[in-house]
Amino acid sequence: MTLIFGAVCGGAQTVGAAPEASLTGRLDDIARQHHGRVALYATQLNTGRVVAIDADQVVQTASVIKLTVLFEAMEQVRAGKAHWDDKVALKPGDAVSGSGVLMFMDAPLELTLKDVLTLMIVMSDNTATNLAIDRIGLDAVNARIAWMGLKDTHLYKKIGKPAEGPMPGDQAKFGLGKTTPREMARVMERIGRCELAGPDEAGAGTLSEKDTAICGVAIKMLRNQFYHDMIPRYLEKLDSTETGSGTASKHGSLNAVRADVAIVAGKTGPMVLSIFTYDNGDTGWTADNEGELTIAKMARAIVEAWSPDGIDGKTLVPGLGLPPKGGGTAPATRPKGGAAASN
Image (spheres, rainbow, N blue to C red):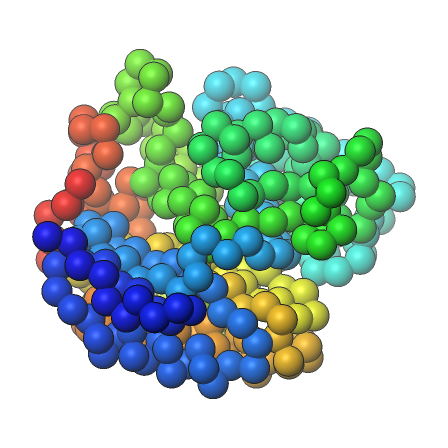
């Protein structure tokens, strides 16, 4: 029987086979101490454990929306509509300010689609993001979001550029994009599980070599994330340059917003954490920003509760070592000590 605990309005809720009052208590304490608001959704994929705080709250995405651009690019590569080595040109006037390095490069400059996506994920490069949107298509990204069944996620426009065409009425409120912690966790879960085939497609539920290769490229980008001050902050205790990172993540930052979405390769099974802080009192841009610390503390609490022996980067592979949801064949590598899938 599934039980829900801590179901106080605005408080942490857990779903699992037994009470996890200590975890919900820790998360509620962290949330109460934060000078701002918190929305969170986390799940351990092999056990079905879930913990949530306002998981369906619609929030600004900041750069986390770039995950949807990456996922649509993966689907287009799978369909043969795009290729990792497609040429993408950086032209004079393309550069926008903010994170990244392309704004410092001399144009014209030729890159590959894989280069552009890597910069978009690893460095959150805003110029690279716009180049990716031009190549992949903003409408295609939003169509893919709808295809995934996400109701409250939307990419409105390119970064630092005027919106093109009529905008939805809520664009001014959310800026670049909107989502919920639950929905963005679903995007990251799809990337990790390598769920590229729709349920009505032939081969759904089976990881082909082609799909595994595509997802391997994406996971490599995500686990080589430069920014480790949020979810990975207290989790990466080993030299990841040799063993590989145990997290694959994408962060987002605005003055009053900090967000991070990650796959965490727990030794007891993979987890997806999607944590947003917003309306933050601390709008500074140091590594000790309160929003970033709040996310890091929440991530540590969840991982210590669900995987007390820590994380293991060797298990962060396409499919995450889990049986596909639709049945079929799982990849050969499985998390050591992981429990059997519950669904």
